[in-house]
Structures are given as C-alpha cells and as structure tokens.
Length: 131
Image (cartoon, rainbow, N blue to C red; front, side, top):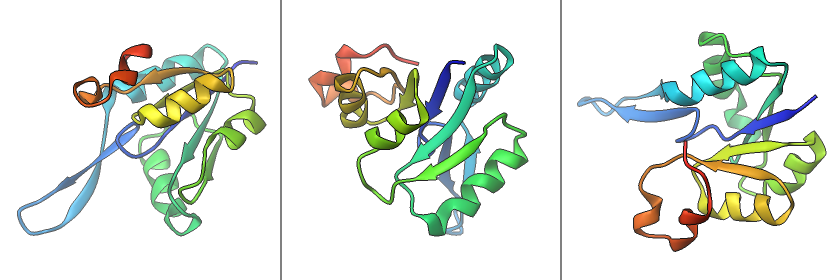
C-alpha cells in the first residue's frame, strides 16, 4: 500500500483571523480533495505536523469535522519530520515548507509543495512539483 503524508498548517488547513481577533481553521480544498482521492485509491494517509502534542486535539477535531480519511496524526514538536515520514513509509509527502520538501527529497521521499509563492523568495521551491 502506498502512503501519503500531509502537513497540517498552511497545507491541509489555514488559519484565518476575524476583525474581533479570533482565529479559525479553514480547509485548503484542493488538498482535501487530493487526500480524499488518494484514500479512495487505497493510499494510507497520515498527518505529520510540526505542532506539539498539546495541539493534537485541534488537528484531530479538524480531521473529524471534515470527515477526512486520515489514519493518524504525528506531532514532531518542531523537529525534523523525515524520521517520522520514513517510519510511516511515506511514498509522497505534501508540505508548504521548502526545507521539509528538500529534506524529504534527500531521504528518497517524493514531495509536492503547496504553492504559496515560495518561489519568489526561495529558489529551491522550483525543484518541487506544486499543488
């Protein structure tokens, strides 16, 4: 079985703020659609995020709220994601971080970069297919 790993912040969801100072998570629909398509085609899907374990509930609540076919959530507390990606057997990783994609690529993991215009500030962004 192929394994898709997905970052959370600015990949699966984005945080929007209201005029009153409140914040809410909003889905990035093209990523949700991609995740659902892969899961329908028998891929195992996992979230790997820089968030801490203290933030895990917000991530799992989001996943449940949008009925996403995600098997597990792994929090790295800001540490390198590659060991977790390798442990999960990631075939493909989706992230908005050029650095994470570069490290994944160096570890032999294909990566899709969520395009938020990083190519304007980081020439390495051009190395990765965009989603």
